[in-house]
Length: 463
Image 1 (cartoon, rainbow, N blue to C red):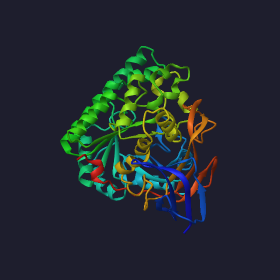
Image 2: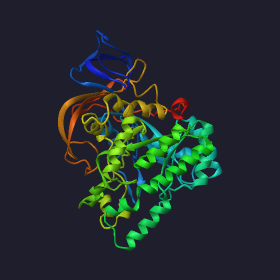
Image 3: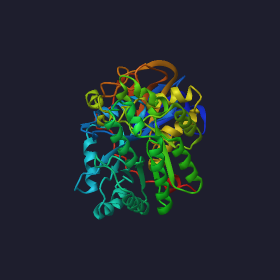
Image 4: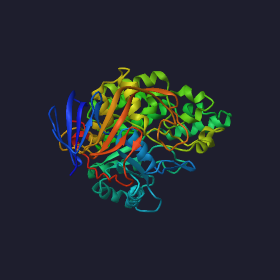
């Protein structure tokens, strides 16, 4: 097997920052020490660079059919952009197919990835309509390595919403099978009422998207999730949380023994709702929507102190033509922002460089905690002997401008246009193979492997 020595870099873990060599044998890390590996087939000089574990993005939407369109990221373009952004593992969502077994959505996703994915991938099945047969499939899905199932508390008109009694049934079955429920937490009745009122009043510009989905609607739904977790004892993960009151509620429930976790997303940490007032405000239409800067500041505090477990991209890359469907009516704009590539760069530049988070906390947010919470630890998320050699080399000083042209995402527009970034990803290794070097990709299509995941109760259930 091929050997690789990453020499002279500064290895960053959640526990320490130290100058060490990383010796790779085949797909695995064999040794991490000051003297590791005197000889190797490939020696990489990492002097002056940070050596980070490959980032894990547990929230992406590839080939996603939504609001009359399909996302432009498939398993090649999406994983290519991910790799350039230092992401070496992703977990994608796959909606239930009406009238078909839930297992089929997992099978179809794996087929989509075959011959295309260049990094490793997992799948979150999404339940949109509950039946006895669907509930009975849950243990089998967990056994097939897909132990995290998502449900929506909104999007009734799109056929995605699951009512509270059915959510409880799903969570109970998942808990018994060793799984975890992921929830899009927004109160549907509040949103539907607001949208109808604004449309009747002729208030159809992008900014009213944010006003129609206020923080209170998210907080209300999160409170219901807390009650579900209390009643069933099952673990719940709140996806793309934007409400600081919701953050406090989740933290309080955790202290009382509730099995809850939450993430936020990159765009909620740097964009805010007034951007929707701009002429091209539809760029920033996503759900939940962007919030006020005061809430954004609290989210930064939450990711720094651990009340928010991790930061994902919620990559939902729709074409500009598709986004323009909402130019005259915000409710017709596909909700989502392309963001799989910027995440690690943004969190380093806006977080670490600006002293909002520490460098070890960056590793927890992007690699270690996603691996622990989503059944990939100890294989992924760490730079230690025995782990997959998923490694990112980052130049901490280099400056560059983020734009649609400087990124590699398939979308023909960017919400991140013109942002000055400090820190540049130089090389990316996936299972020991150097797949990115500068602006070149060396990965063969289809080299990515399906990640069979199994949740560890000591991470998903609070002591």
